[in-house]
Image (spheres, rainbow, N blue to C red):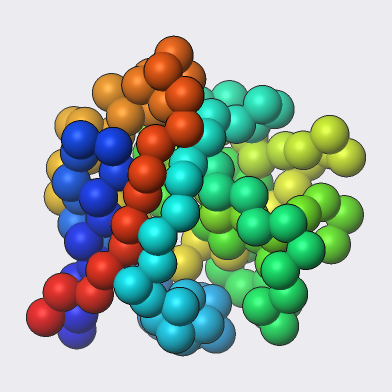
Length: 138
């Protein structure tokens, strides 16, 4: 099984794919890797950061979806009532948009560096967007 290295701002994290629970979402994201973007702080969801993907259609439906990600759980919202996006919870979070509560596919979980997740979230909140990169390791 391959591990994912996530570089976000000055922090580094390791993560695993949730292949058994969200196989289609994992396969689709793997095909995009290495993946680089910028993360910004959420507006409606609480303690989380997100990567807005606009009208990007990844051809996905819902699998292993939740509205309440635990810190370190990474969700992909495949679009619908709001834009496609990736959400990374770092504290108390209820996934939402201006259209109301959302539910995203929990497809990846951070396994290393969790102690730096809240500091990253607060950095994004107070200092603005940060670069983020997802790379396969091993």
